[in-house]
Length: 115
Length: 107
Image 1: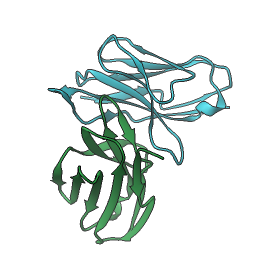
Image 2: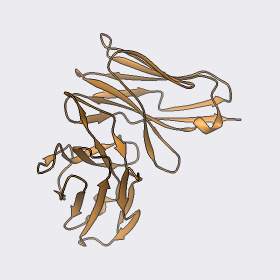
Image 3: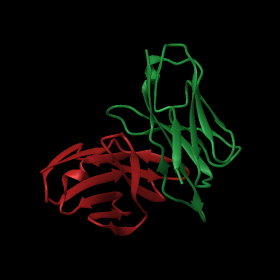
């Protein structure tokens, strides 16, 4: 049982390049999330998917797109990377118990540098 | 103003000391989470609570819904407790995070 996995762990891009961050969970969770973490700031939500087939913008969606490929996988795409997108990216998942969400499980993070 | 405020931002303690980290929030919530981020970067969930108090080993989390305040206590602190502790509140589907409290426990 791997929990939440993310690839790659590290990436360096040049301005304007594109890339996709991959995330998968094996806990049969309905909801998945992409966050970014910057120094001096709390985790900020980029996009989330409350259930398979749905995606919604979070606090900082500009410059990103997402795909909920199936229940397990939720990818984050940077179409044209900018230095402001240098950050650590975390994927997370959780599920509903009745009408309440349970705890979130986090992936190990992807450290992205855009030059 | 941030919806979630943590204090202190940084905390240094000696091994064995009793630690308290505070979290105040300004919105109605369905649950409050305490998370731990290890020096290597990994994030794990410690507690999720919506009322009262929870205990796990040397860690205790309390919440006062009326005062919109939660505390995380660590008893008999140890250097391996050194980490960033993050408070997050859930209104509906999403979590809103505090900036974290960096705890260093010296031997």
